[in-house]
Amino acid sequence: MSESFMSEMQTTVIGQVESLTRYEMEGNKGGSIWVSKPNSGKNENVLGRELMKIKMPFAMFDQLKAKQDSGELSFPAEMEILCDIDMGGGNKAVLSAVSIRKVLDEKTTSAVPPSTVSTAPLSTTKK
Image 1 (cartoon, helix red, strand yellow):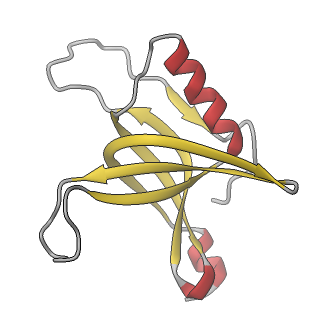
Image 2 (cartoon, rainbow, N blue to C red):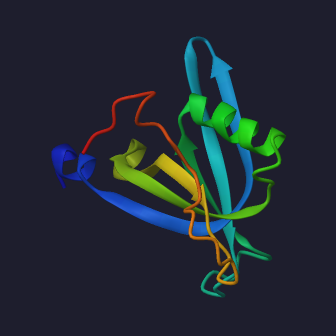
Image 3 (cartoon, one colour):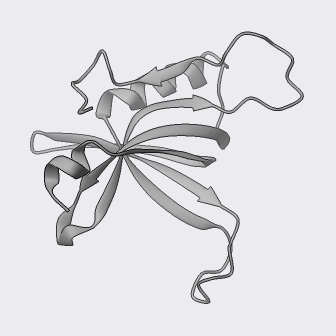
C-alpha cells in the first residue's frame, strides 16, 4: 500500500471514550484517546473490555477539557471519532483523530446536533 493511498483513508470509530491523555516532550506535542468496547472473546489473552488507542492533536485535549469543565461533556462517554488512517512504524496502520463528538442517546429528541470538536481550524488535515 502506498503512503498516498493510506493518507486518503478515513474511518469512524464509535465507542466509549474512557480517558484522554496528552504530552509535551522535547518540542513534540500530542495526545491519545483511549476507547473501550465489550470483549469480543476472540482473544483469550484479554480480560475485561478491549482498549484502543487513537492519536489526538494536542489542541483537541484543551477543546474537550473546556467541554468537560462547562458540564457539556463528562468521561467516560459514548463518542464518535472521525480518524485518518496513517502509516505507522512497522507498516502498521495508526488512527489519528480528526474530529470527535458525543453520540446522542436514541431517546434524545433534540433536533440540535451535538457539537463537534475538530482539528480543521487548528491544523491541516489530509483529504
